[in-house]
Image (tube, rainbow, N blue to C red; front, top):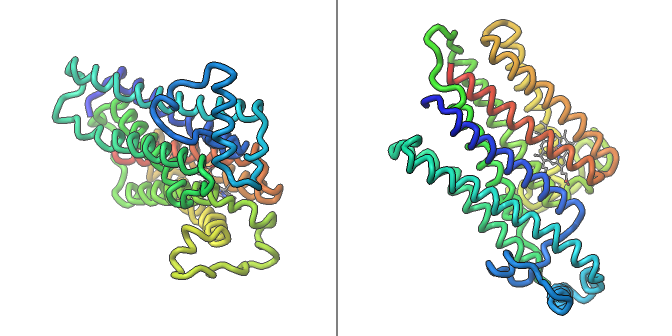
Length: 340
Ligand code: HEM
């Protein structure tokens, strides 16, 4: 990839917007601020109610869409407005991210800074963006109705698309920021490169598991560690049939695999850091490996503390933020291992 600071700055700016969107979405979910749009249409999504009558009407439609016994049925207008603005801000942020991706892309192509043969590289982030938008709209409609539940897997795919967008933009941004490696730069050995891919893959799998855990409220199944509900192998671990569905729909299984797979990630990150210490990695990569190990260690401590304290929303948000930082460090280390 040819060095281009403007394109790199643009891709890093999009990545930062995705981080903002993810944390804002996490806060909405944890504060249970809902998605109070009963009929998701572009006009509803773009234009908030203006008059008191319109607010009353919108709040009433939202209350009616919920089950009679739900807290939604008795929601005050003030609480409805609060939820509405939280959701509305999230939508604006998502739209801003989409514009921040598409408009500069067209400009860079028109000016010849991005060559047409390089355009297919931008197909993956574009698809992730579309997927995130469509899934977001789908979740908005389903949570606004009485039936009100999308499957947890589908719900987790929404932030997963955001993470993919973030990862690809960040990865390509690094490429444009660093450019071609200098000939005198030491090359990273193939086994170490493969190890960096293993760490990145493990971090991605762990992050996906965490997103699923969050959608299943899996933090609430226990407030103990290392035991779960008093046992090392908790009851109900594989109670769903077929057994594979336990890994996507059983909160106990999803929590159990997520907490223990964290140690696998920690082991992989520690080994990569050991390679740096043994000077198998050049110094510019050693910093990335050390940051990754510290990030994963911190994430383990935060994860365990969060569970022990009963998954308070503030700590869950910290866990999400550190998770994003860990993903960034893993991408950086892997990218530098290959572009040396
Ligand atoms: C390598 C270590 C880890 C990584 C990278 C990681 C990453 C994540 C991510 C990305 C989420 C989703 C956040 C969201 O979208 O809201 C999450 C959720 C979660 N993680 Fe971890 N995690 C790690 C270790 C742990 C450990 C050791 C535990 C517990 C012992 C744990 C417990 C949880 C729980 C309970 C949730 C769901 C929180 C909620 O309900 O909002 N995690 N994790």
